[in-house]
Image (cartoon, rainbow, N blue to C red; front, side, top):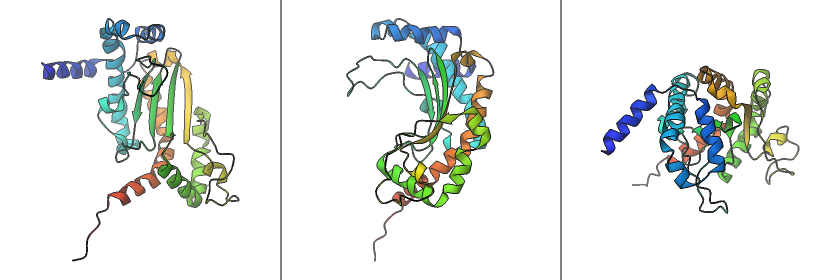
Length: 251
């Protein structure tokens, strides 16, 4: 029974359109007002047909293009799509569901710590596209900052690229007020070294998610950000690879 159910869902995703209908946006809008399990469960079929299946179809379409500009980010669509269920364990807000639909393309080899990736988010009011490294753990913060010490000229070229910045703005870097300990205060990259996350973001009207050209539009944004994402992942992949090297005993 489980196998048949999984197969039917996969078939539905493969035949769904890779964009959304007004019913999907209406569902998210109503979910915001009725964030309760009993409300959601009686409308699960709407969620599956109008949100989940089109999102999986969109992710699948985008993965085809990523084979060219982001091959290290290719995973199964189900692993890219984020769960709609909220983690309420440490939150005062016990609402069980997110009121948006989202996907995150992480870098293979960095799944446990996320690393740099691509993000898509649909809410009742907006379509958000973003790319970069967000809220990295201490080890990744240090690795990226060290990377900027030596490669700041390349980073400047990437982060200030005119084509990129006409489409997207800087995501809030949550910058420190002072240079981090151990880094030279007068270094030319200090503006970026003080950042605690590195990325760009575009906020579009939710109507863009209803257009058949949605996959092409999203891909255009992601392609622009690919060099930046690759740059940010370089030190993280190097650090991850170093941890995996075996230690050989002396015989």
